[in-house]
Length: 235
Image (tube, rainbow, N blue to C red; front, side):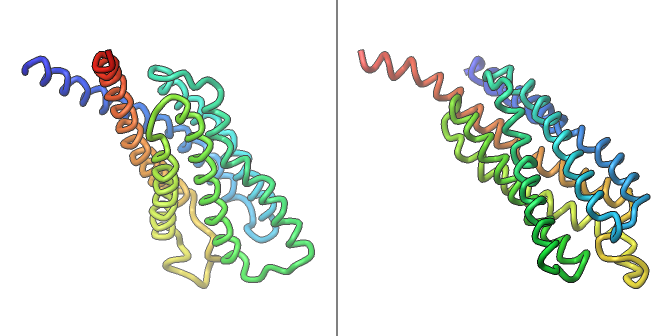
């Protein structure tokens, strides 16, 4: 009985450590956000919108690759994911590049009104697609090693969309357009609003996916423990 309690306690501690390590893998999002927020603050939202978009996409791709690398190091202690995880993590942002090119091609022939409001909505849909794509790509990697990996797609999508919504709410609360709409366009936000929003989004996404990751690992360990028993029964 004591051994069982010690085992359960040790598994809980390992789960907490894994969750914390996983949460920390999202930390690169903060310095990238600070750099982009400070840079965008110096640009004009109307005349420099193309430059802003490509700066955000480029930094997001680099950041996603770095996050994927850190996550692969955490996962490497349990399964061999190699470079596949890095590619899978960056795949969602990679999908946004051709989508962005398509949007800009359309804007050359079709007028899209209500800048920046309509572009902000378009951007939210783009990030949702990116999160779903990333979750699906990561699932394909996990499915080779763990059972019930299909839950990862749902968890990653929910975590990303929830983080995006909460981050947008926090950012809007700190945006001057909330208090003085006549002074700035809707999309405008101070650097601290960007930073706070991305931080909330990162903590939400990392926290939710970390919980699911710990659960998946426990399910797999149970499968490993049950395997010898099933083989003995077969004999």
